[in-house]
Length: 325
Length: 104
Image 1 (spheres, chains in turn red, green):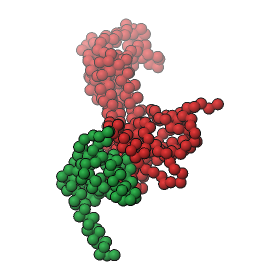
Image 2: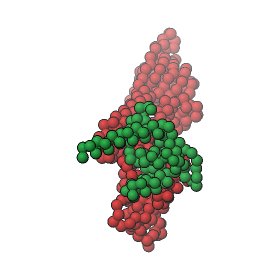
Image 3: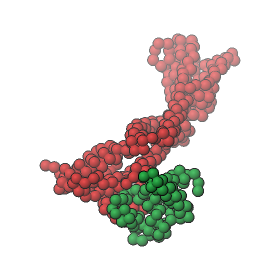
Image 4: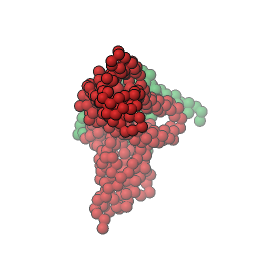
């Protein structure tokens, strides 16, 4: 048994509004009357007699802001207002069989203006999402630390990846839309050389954003700049790592005896996080820790042998002193 | 008249022309639709999406101004700039018409 309501998920890009209109009319002819559409694209229908209705979409934010007056204009012209969704307003009018397709736009200039309004409305979220990705990347460490050390750091990282994912998904839809729009504009105005520049501009903007994100990621995850200085004053030896940006491992090898003590002083840790480990050649690490703050860590050697002391940084700015006594 | 106005409105669409022509007397959108329908013996029926978009665009561009609201219908009237633009357009159409007559 079929119910009296039906919900269908559909995706239409901006210039595909005509397909959307035809789809709603076709549903109505099959006995499903369109009631509303909800995020992100669920079309709701209720059971009705098969009816012949023309459906039309307009994109006019100003109209939505001045709803009463806007709807009045349409109803004066015989169009019934149904709902708004994502900046679009849906209208319908009872159609007469065999008559010409009745439009809510009577010239191409105003139809194109409508598409431009819709297109502009959809660019803003792209820019916003990219800005969020960039901001969360740039301030990941400082914000992460402010949010409370390790968990804050991870939270920021996850957040920035979510933003990046969203931005990419949106970008894909946006590109499809742009391609459709471009085709449509060409079809309407024939010569569209003036608009081609606009598209070029939009794409340059998007590519520039991707490039900025790439650079930020690269700086955050790949690039390293640090110095190591040996300490040897007779009874203590070791080294100091001073990093502007450490995204790699600093490994030093020592022959150590039982009872030797390795001390790590995190002299300064402005940002990022560190992993410290001591490994006897070819074996599992005997000492390992994650460090998110300034502090002091030590390990006393249990067996004579050849050891690797490893400092691995991720976006680290700071200084680490390693001494062996 | 600045370059933007000239670029957008000279020459203008038939819709824009009729809107400016009708708004020499204050009127609302649907009033214009009816007037134009009458003037053209039903050949030109201005559509609501076009009307709403054009009226707000022309208001923003300063060609028409909002006068008052009556029963949820905004009443507009032409401005000096609007008159200047339609006069230019009328001269262009008059010349077009004259040339057409001569060549026929």
